Image (cartoon, rainbow over all chains, first blue to last red; front, top):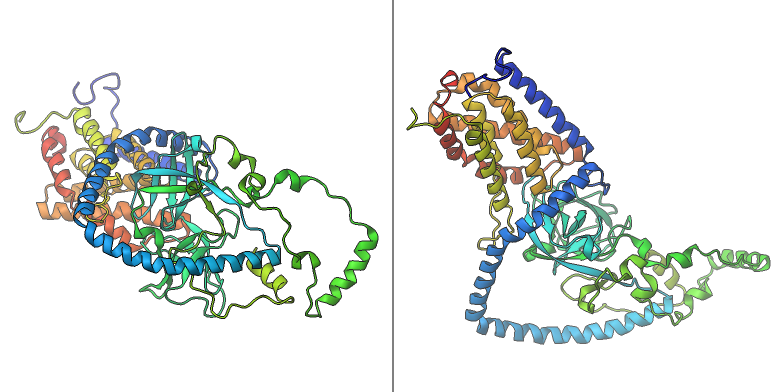
Length: 388
Length: 170
């Protein structure tokens, strides 16, 4: 068919202008799509459904594409392991000797920690079940930094779940389909994560800007941070559990504080998706919803003045808080939401679950210098500020 | 002429290059590390933007570019419509300037290609900044701009293959 033959052969319009109109219409369509996409707001509309469908379709393709790279990497690793076995053995022996010392310190600290918790009546968060996944598509551009992982709804993954590799926090899930989930990395320009400085407990927002070291914004306090400080998730907002390792603070060339991510120390090929939606799943919702018995009027009138007087005296105000903890070990089955303990959520072993309170940075914490037993007056205030 | 160039069949000058760009985008999205480094992520779709607009204006091109842009958004996990918008703005830029630039030497065409890419990524940069309130790192943008600039020979080859197919747009 030659140019302009066919049903519209008598219709003559200037081609360039027609194409211009087509371009404008297509641009308007693109803008409409842009405005309707709520990628980082955890809402799934029509665009979210289309994206999920595309992710399902891309999952087998991504697995096929990434397979040769994976095989090559495994072969190269095999060769490296073979030729570097002696060196690695020496290094591991030295590391093992060092770790034995840390292990002894950790046991002692764990014992001390358990006693403090018992004194304070502190409840640790239950272990969070996890789903392991393999990254099959990898976007690294300046305008989108995401990964497609091969675990989806069938493993209990939900939008908002935090994602880690073996070193630290990687990002969070922004889209889930059957057999695939889309992970927004901390470095993505749309990523915002509430974090804290481990040394000072200062809060900040970790803001991705497509560079390898995301920025720390809204830092509060006087001298809240210095080079080398550990950065952890703060748990503020309830979307991500507190205490997950994020990285180390570094001063950027532009003068802003940035974070060198722990997750970047190793490749993000295998990830663990924490099946953590929000803090609501950590409590027994049914028990929480049950109305308790009203307090007797006499007790209320007698405790009110007591509470007022204890604020002035350095004596423990709440007998319940200073009492040893009740013998009720917090387990995942007793305290987590039904969704996480359902059979659809695989929790095969202890290695497939992480305890929020126990998730600390890779190097073990140093022994507490001059750690002393809490006196009777200090604990309630310390507990209220640190334990959340 | 038949031996040097090919007939301007929409499937051959639009469909096949579009499919090739999609395959290239998918291949470069594989999670592969070479010596511990991640490979670059060039924007293959700019080849289509440039070559299609230089060869001849057509109503199908904006539609196909929108589709390719949506494909890029789906593969890269970006906001839907983001790359479609950038590619269409760049296509409009090439259309507007094609009378001025057609027939220039290879070096000038390469500069024109770089300007087209800059318009595309610049529009996306501004859009992202407006939508997220956060500007992407210019170094990261340069990390994608540079490998894409090196793709000009691919666009040049596509243009050379079809440039004599329709004498009215030579």
